[in-house]
Length: 240
Image (cartoon, rainbow, N blue to C red; front, side, top):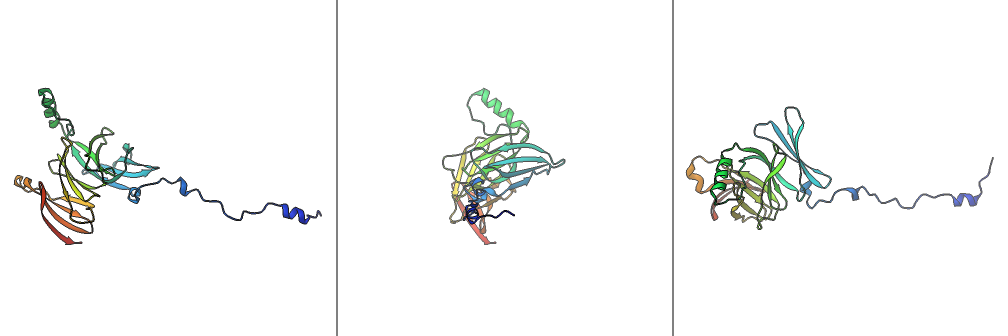
């Protein structure tokens, strides 16, 4: 039997005193907000489509599925910003077009307004803008933005006429947008330190109610707001 000398034993390889640094955490995408990791989803009003927004590597990916067969029918990658809220809506094909005083442009706008509305997925983005994605066209068909709106959009809700959109942002401001022109029509700042994370419009019962709108706004409490340009006229609060 061969004998192993003490010198050979000492020269043998020794296990490292410290473990190697794990690199799994380095390969994970860096996100600015933990809320970006949450998946958002919603069924379309007719329940025929299902929208799912999830984090793919370092970007948000929106996929729309056909609920009859479970297949993906549209996909959209957000390249410049991530989303904080999602909901379905409908817009006309002429929404967001630039207005013109020419007769030709006016005629085109009138024709597009008569076309049937398009079903869209509305995404409130971290950069303060709102984008409208059409599954039928597999593309973003409209984006609402304004220099004063740079905080994450936490919630969106659409008027019954489908031509105006209400948003609540992390800066504590509720904004009213025109979907047809893309303009910012008004803004209202909350007195609360905590921004509203949910908005829900109260349905109109008569055309006379157009002068002011009531909506439920929620954070740690639910408030009933009555908004009429230029400022809120009444705020009712009830604890959840």
